[in-house]
Amino acid sequence: MKELSVDVAVIGGGPAGLAAAIEAKDQGADHVIILERDVELGGILQQCIHDGFGLHRFGKRLSGCGYAHHFIESVAEKAIDVKLKTIVLEITDQKIIYAMNEVDGMMKITCGAMILAMGCRERTRSQVFIWGTRPSGVLTAGTVQRYINMEGYLPGQKAVILGSGDIGLIMARRMTLEGIEVEGVYEVMESPGGLTRNISQCLKDFQIPMHLATTVVRIHGNKKLEGVTVAQVDENRQPIQGTQRFIPCDLLVLAVGLIPENELSRQLEVEMDSRTKGPIVDEHFMTSIPGVFAAGNVVTVFDLVDYVSLTGEIAGRGAAKFIQGKLNLQMPAKDVLPGDSVNFVVPQRIRTVNAEDSIPIYFRVKKEMRKVEVTATVDGQVCMRKKHAIALPPEMMVETIQLEKIHEDARELRVSVKVG
Ligand SMILES: Cc1cc2nc3c(=O)[nH]c(=O)nc-3n(C[C@H](O)[C@H](O)[C@H](O)COP(=O)(O)OP(=O)(O)OC[C@H]3O[C@@H](n4cnc5c(N)ncnc54)[C@H](O)[C@@H]3O)c2cc1C
Image (cartoon, rainbow, N blue to C red):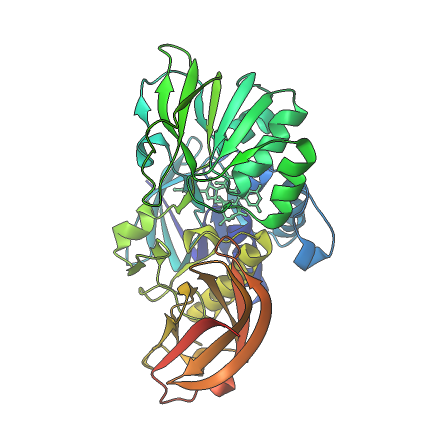
């Protein structure tokens, strides 16, 4: 088995991994390596040919590929080692990575710090319990996106989309532009799952109807999909008798949510957060295992790639400091907790002694609220207040907290959102 020793190893070459590797190198890590199972760097962004990426970071509307390109160029300039078509099979808490590819065969990579940046994957029909047969023509939105944008296939002629998250909305527009008739978008919840701008630009502009509180209850067809039955649902999301309707179609596009890809993290038994479905991280995006960091959608599903890149940079900086022995890990961590109306917060821990001047706290609200005030409290004392016109569950919120406000003996920081 080939053996390698590196300072920082990054698993996953999507935007989180790219940003993490660049920052680790910039902060003094000598040998940085990116391990990526795909044939090229960029992660999911390579299949995102629509624009709207990088508004925060670059102040312009780039395509996903365009956004990724900036980072891929920088990786090449900085002579960061990249191994493509390389899958990581196993990681250990001794920071050893077992990976393989067709050139090197099996590899044992020992590293000073490891950054988990494996992204997320899509939920499938079995996770949303749709009855019926198993014909071809039932695909996740990401697969359809990859087929159309990268492989050059049109997977159907008439589509029904289940799920109104951003990926479903973007695919509604994309399929329409390619000549696939999109019959409608069906959403089991009473409110849409995607960003307001995507509802307007991807559905309204193309007169594609959205049906709220409605879901697909059955799939029909033997070898090939022949249609689906949809039904309205009650407040418990159960189908309402008498509302069933058959829709003939040859493509059912499932856009029913993303799950952080944490099989490798679980092998390590890093502490996980049941709300984010990712590892619990501190202000450096370090997990519960010293020297193992996480960034991007592995931690939680962020809407904006700008946030993903930012978390990569924080983790990359943390990893460089870790190998230089600059992180004080003796200090007890303070909990960062979700308060009123907040579903989760990231990071979930802070050790202020290690921290820089301020840190971003990412969070999502539980329900739609207007004219809200976000407050952060340290052991009950308010340390930050900010007003927002609207807070929506699908849109990640972020507030910057000045760390000088969190005194050394503090036990917890709590983020709450209230109307007022
Ligand atoms: C199908 C789909 C469509 C999306 N569309 C959009 C969109 O239109 N707009 C948007 O803003 N966001 C979109 N997203 C969200 C998008 O994932 C993020 O904006 C961003 O790409 C996340 O970056 P990341 O680096 O965390 O993960 P990813 O971009 O997913 O990158 C993770 C990388 O890790 C690699 N990897 C995973 N496991 C291993 C392993 N064991 N060994 C080696 N390599 C591994 C993967 O191959 C991948 O390249 C989409 C997500 C999905 C799943």
